[in-house]
Length: 262
Image 1 (cartoon, rainbow, N blue to C red):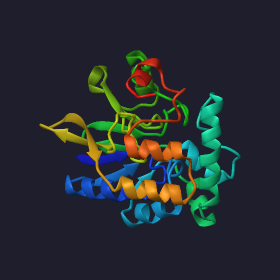
Image 2 (cartoon, helix red, strand yellow):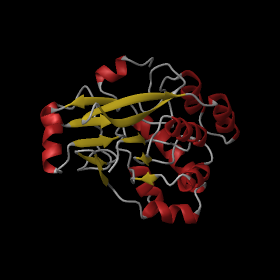
Image 3 (cartoon, rainbow, N blue to C red):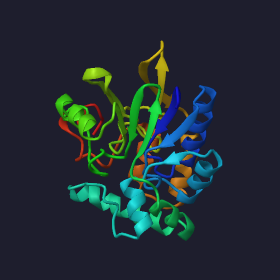
Image 4 (cartoon, helix red, strand yellow):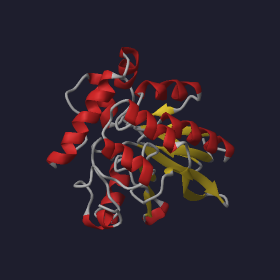
């Protein structure tokens, strides 16, 4: 049973941000760290992520990217429908697949699709997109409270934590239940900041659950340089340097898209 844990998703090969997230979470007293999937995509050198996860014994939930790479599929199963989004997704996937070792592909293949744990009195379910579908997008503006409460009932959880969208948010539900999108550390949250975000989930004042979104600074200039050196799209690099998304835009609901630059 835990009292304070760190949760993050969407590493997207950003091993530099992963290093800083691990360091910051330990400094804040996290008893354990959990990754909610999508280790590859977007960034350079995907194999540099795995040694950090193993060294710090970080439990990992399988994301759609991990499932695809691990099973040798043709695409990332990201859930995009827009041709432009799929164009960049293919570039990212081919690079990630080509630069992920056979050993690490086998490791990705065997990852669990969910992790259940106890945080004080709360039954916590960790998943990638949603408990019912790995690549389901749960956006703050389009996901109803009733739907989230039904998920908690159907999957016997007091707290559901997910990622996949790349943008952190949370909602308190009835009966002291909660939904938390823990955010992504692989790229900014389309907020004009170069920092990335993870979540500290803790018990406060006895049994009150608190989800705190934590910004992480890292050497984003170095990451951008490495991305360019690896020949990744300049659109990806621009997001790292500016904090604004330039790809994956059509999947955003209207409210979330208006918060961005493009």
